[in-house]
Length: 551
Image 1: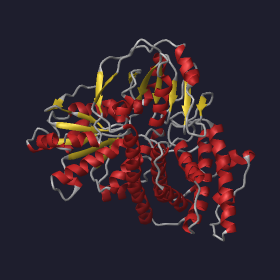
Image 2: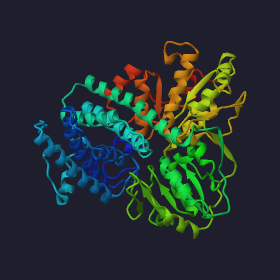
Image 3: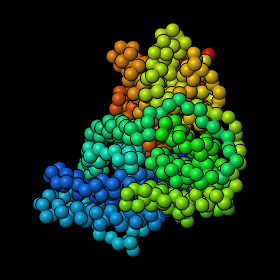
Image 4: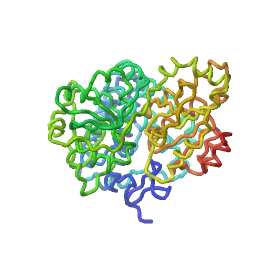
């Protein structure tokens, strides 16, 4: 089989096996190889840093930031720009060699591995990249477990970086990520030992999501029940996508009084739920749907688009909006302007604003409102009402349908599943999976909406907090005794860390779709099925019966 690359980190990977010629996401083979090299160098940095940390030597913030950014940069649909990736490789090699020199001065022994000994230059990058990819580990099951751990770390890093940009950090999370990367690079472990690493990653995933939740709420207030406009106004607009609320804040401040409105797209929708952003009258609504509809929705929006994180869908060659695309943070796309922060962490969005002023207002594609803001603080304020509805039988079951959306036709399953649920059930959601059912008008139960949107994918933490609180209220011994069904969609690595977080909390009977990850080998999948009763999804009709939800 011809193989210019190998990547199977997302749900849409080719034929459910792996992308070998070009990524289904649009990633070119040379970009995939550049990312493989960056991960190789990042493991080297981590090995050296881990050894020094274990010898009680301090590790610089620069190292922690590099590892976090490098992991985030290689997440699905974040960065398609080879040059920006190679610049990170350049920086990583410098940092790695500095750490090696420090270790030598302090007599700290380092493993003799390629990640530490390779001293290539730009001229060597392309060839070296071909030798350090996923298939470098020849044992299928060990490869599967190492990649499961790696993808969990990537999701963790994405959430950690957003928290760090708001001034919230946790050294123990950095230490774990670098220690885990060291294990992947250096250690020969059994499958059972790798499973322990994976579950520990889940525990740190919970810790990271709690950190980001604290960062977001302490900075911008607790999300509130909010009706969000999905129509348009008659002024030019800027569309902001992704997950980074710091960028959201800076854009709103800089656009105030300019005659330019700001709209959210996809995962940025939950920004509307935060009290701090409600004071901006020009923050007018959400435009469009999940990330994969970018090509048509960005065209009709007419104004500039700012990516603060994934997901980027590569524009077609004749796309009229490409010159209006801007990237920041871990994202990148060839030919698009990258907005860097200054020394104080501030970004200048004036170029985007000036372009917006020359654009036509957005073309209306829908009208109405959608409701959200049901993060843990808000739901716990409704606890008495929710508990009473459960006790009286008005609510028979909660269905956790968090996670990601995607392009595959098989994802219609989630829309049809939501439509088929009995009227006495409530959907708990977070992430862009909600776009499959948040506009269906499913009604309410005694004033409680039947779709409770907690927010972004990281706000799956809120769903865990809610579940644990309900366990306490109902005085249950096991979280799995709650009337909750987990039917979760996944697409990329942030969903992987959410899954591992749930497993670490002891949640079982998780149904994951629309297909199980290709990076789970048959043996690894069997272990997860036996330990946690993890399973895939079937047909809507069969699954409703299986969950005891058939009418």
